[in-house]
Length: 169
Image: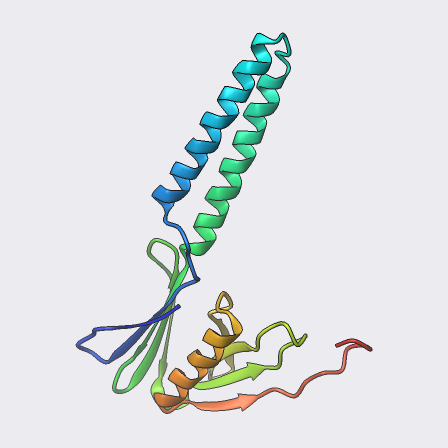
């Protein structure tokens, strides 16, 4: 998702993955699964199949770990700030973990062609020989929208030539 933020120093965009459910929502889903699993486990345990208990625990642990991992991946964000003389890119999860700062005149966009028709182009911010991948979590439509937004800020777009890899790609 591309979101324009209010900023006094310039123009700022926040890029985040699409999230259909919040962390509290995921916890409620997991608790619902735990209640249903608990009811089934109690039934089978009363029937004498007590070996179901550890497997139900493993199942709930695996589902919880998967939900946590997915929520963590969806909590990523990238913030691009276009100031009068510089461009700042910040990446992180809960806080800024990485930051790049370049003069505005030296920043360009590099587009790698999609490796397959179902995939999207990879967008890179380039400056002074440094290439930083940008918003690899966006879908193809949002990726094209991001390129349009970056072009509206005066950045030049360069497309890398497609490499022939094999028969299908």
